[in-house]
Image 1 (cartoon, rainbow, N blue to C red):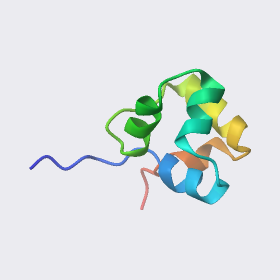
Image 2 (cartoon, helix red, strand yellow):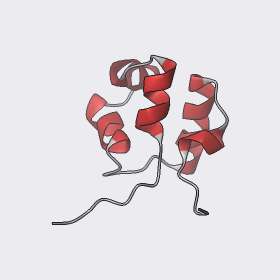
Image 3 (cartoon, helix red, strand yellow):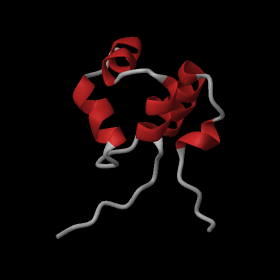
Image 4 (cartoon, rainbow, N blue to C red):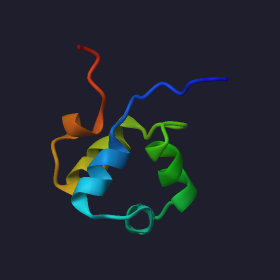
Amino acid sequence: MNKIKRYNRIKAVLADSGKSNKEIAEHFKIQEETVSRWMSNKAQPSLQRLFELAEFLDVDVRTLIVSNKS
């Protein structure tokens, strides 16, 4: 079984913000499936999109990614 490596914290940040996949998809004019794939770490947004997402969620972009340091 392939374990998916976590690179982003989008799911957790969305839960804290009260925003939904649908709101993100509508705002960025993308499919909800794309947002779902980001949340499950099956795909990653581009760096530019990550910054745009942070702006939309009103969070520091660093909160959207998993630290590489323990």
